[in-house]
Length: 57
Image (cartoon, rainbow, N blue to C red; front, side):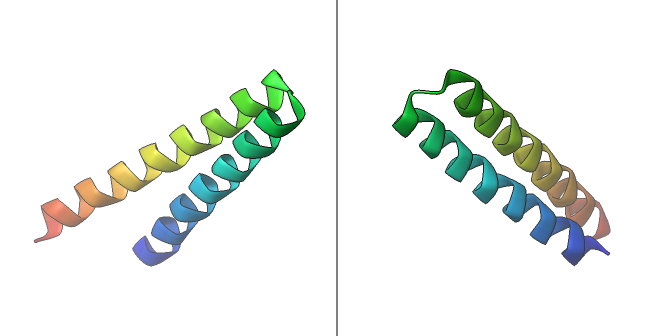
């Protein structure tokens, strides 16, 4: 389960970075903001999983 969540976090971060880059390239501020939000969501999920790992060890 934890591995699944970790890969999900990485996927969200990558999608967010791509969306932000495309948004900047075409000058779409909304898409850029959505990309940043996805990255933040992925960062939060990753931090949660790291916290779980720290408590297990």
